[in-house]
Amino acid sequence: MNDDIGFYLFLAIAAAMFLFFQIQKLTRKLDKEEALKPISGSGTANNTNKQNSKNYQGFCDAIDNEIRLLRQDALNNDILKNEENRDKFLEELSNISKKLTFIQTMNANKDAQQWEAQLFEILNRIEVLVDENFKEAQAINDRTRLNLEKHFENL
Image 1 (cartoon, helix red, strand yellow):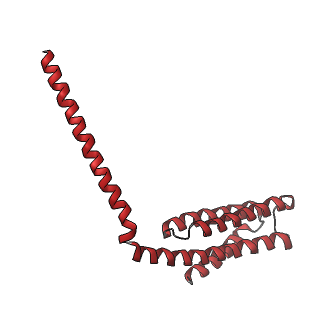
Image 2 (cartoon, helix red, strand yellow):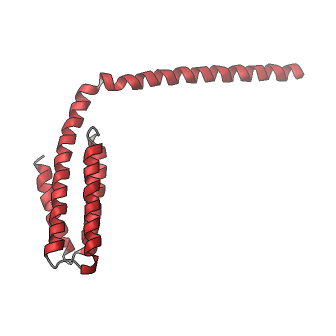
Image 3 (cartoon, helix red, strand yellow):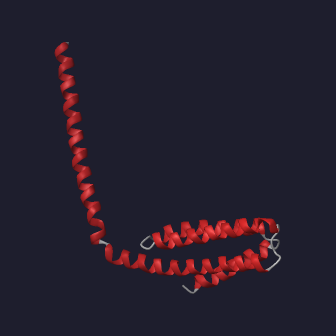
């Protein structure tokens, strides 16, 4: 009986060692393949990412221009729901503009999906901010969407 347990224990340890070494071998192989991927596929993907980057950076400039228009509207017109919140609104616009600049800088080599996700977040923040602060929020959001849509089509 004692010999049977020892034998089974030996088999279990041998099987575990075999699996361990096979997993290590597979992991090293996958690491090598992953390290070689950018070298072998860099041509087309890199050119596509550069074009995406150029297009989306141009779109970021258009968004920033819309932020400037919203800022001017808030400063020069009586269109805010609550004039007491003007400074808070302008500060929030400034924060969005800073985040937009950060996205332009950090996403230079990212793919379209990453750009779109971050820009979608920015556009949603702008829309919510307009809804919360402007009397004619729907009209202003429509104007912003139309301007950005025209710019995006020209990219």
